[in-house]
Image (cartoon, rainbow, N blue to C red; front, side, top):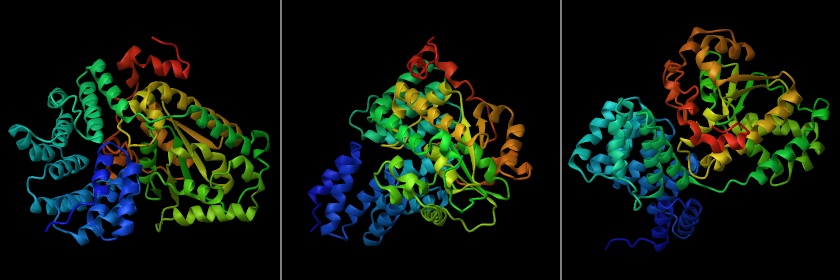
Length: 483
């Protein structure tokens, strides 16, 4: 007799489909509390963890599920999806092949494998994999989406748009699939020069992504940090005795060239990019919990500062010979001064971009669910930008000339000059390999993964000009004149 599925797991499936990750997480964990080896509960919880950034737990859960029941193609496919997320593309392809041996016509697995080929810059292989299903008709939405992505990469945005338009409005599809549909359609329309239609598609995707951004909470949080590190007293505040020499922190807004900057440093034989570390947020949570920073920071002793610095270094260590290591967690813009007190010899690179081009780039990007709640509306993007800029101006006033500002526009139009500036600031000799950063073969997991696998290009400079008056809400929020 077939094992009956726990009703809570049916509810968890529905919660995942509707984007309710917290509910799905709680339901799966409640089942595993009672049935520790329920492979479906493990697999569903792995899916939730992967979607919410708990990658290590997700991998362990899905591997445990496969160990319990290795004959389910969807489990192998989910493992492959996770390996792709982590940049292990070859491992992912192997897991997809295992899934397809078990179930050759599993369209979700086929779509996942095609997406991995796209990540490897192989659009022809991706298209070849899904084209027969598209030609036959009746394909899953995931197949239509990956087919459209392949067409875009292959230089046929009109064909890509056509492949997706007939799938609208897709109201019976899972929320994340619908979000992806609209963002890929927007990209196709933008590539095709149909900017009004592109904007409308991005807008629909953002409506589905919308989460509540509380500007007042953001402002209060920044106010508290500024109160903890007043400009006039900053220089005389105690520091740790851990120098942090060779540590570089890249900060800024999303879509402002931070990944390019990190990749340039990583291409140097003595540089190493560590990606977007969650280390500092974890250290702060362990030290302060929910207590306001302004209430606790001034009472810390040098020994406590040293302990925080040691905790950071232990978590962010890398056993390599590089002399410069980079943490590009953009959210660290809030804590530049705090990091300077933990690591007095650390260096900071602030990546900037025209706020309108940056804003439309955020608006046009499908971000992971429940992240960056400010990014799903032009007004909220603009208000968050103002707040981020307020924090950075405070740190610039505290640190004087100890922050290097790198403009995205300057970086892509004057590559060598700005590459030399970045390397010099990091105390690295110029190396021509940094001019060909895309040849390193390094795995990049951020939103700019496609850009850093290609030579520098300037086509995104002044991207906002294509959308004209459609961006007036962003102009209004940032204080720029409307068109």
